[in-house]
Image 1 (cartoon, rainbow, N blue to C red):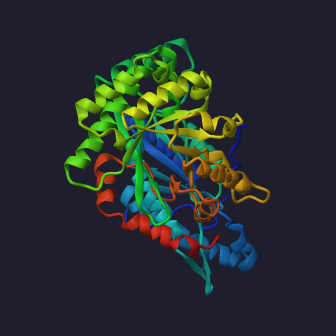
Image 2: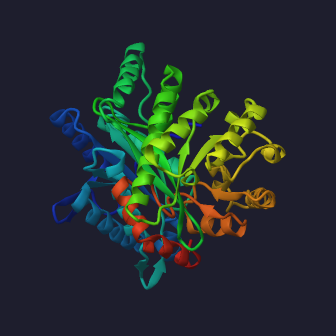
Image 3: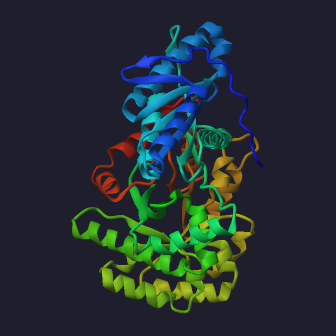
Length: 452
């Protein structure tokens, strides 16, 4: 379903404010600035973040518009403080803001995202009342998501509205614009073929965390920042790689890079968690797949017990008997097997007993609805109980709020993954986190004390 951003409302805190070198612009001024920047700098990349403050209406309801204006002034100050370090900010109207981020990649923007969520998550005191706020963030990268200011702002605002549907500190990215012509598609395909040789593909690492905040596994996620096209979202990347037949080669590159990284952690004496790698259906169905995994483990020196392969239900159900045999061969290497996006579109519980599995990852669509009235908490609990009966670990994917964190543990999930406990991190950042997991432990301890 397509969501059209609402019309921009007149700012109640003024069109321009100052904080150091930063300026709080109006929406029209921001569009003009974006267009001017694009005209002057050509293909130099940047990110645009639209911020929506959640449940702001309750301040107006409790304290009236005077209290609402005071709250907006404080929120504006926090936005400007971030912009003084990261770029330019604008007040789009009501409880919506935008920040132009000096970030040339998704990775760079994600660091700013963490700062925005932290700044707006601090208690807001208005007329002696303390409010605990959350924010919904939508991001767009230039030029991948649009070639002009109006398009970038519209797509970032649409992404923010999608984030608002999930509540809490949710973040949504605007996907790269789909190619509009055969010529553009041809250019995208050629860029993908050159991506590996140009060293444009990167891995990010997202932790899977237990209730105490300990990292038990790390999932390797593929990122493509094209020199020609900017950031290309992973969904577009994978779909294009499958259609062009190079998904197996890219998948093997990802597997080798992830195993090399995990081996480096071991060699460095760090407490290394299991490394999880997604496997495409084309990879998994290849007769050479098990031999490829064996060869990469031997080349990198990574023990098989340190590797976890994630496959989807659709991949398994294409030929469940063959899938079971292939999984058994991988288990002989010590490799762990997980089902990713569990429960989407099938009746998955019926086939669990036929497969040599170690873990299931409950799809984020269940987690998204777990806190809603009449939501999915009983479903997640049932899945967990049956999985535990078979000796399987259960991971809840897409955990983004303290409430979801508490509820998935109430449903007896073993591990959680999502922005609430950790965003995808670069090699150096995940290494630092593994060396000192204090920040994750803080989330776990503080979760039950959050207000909504």
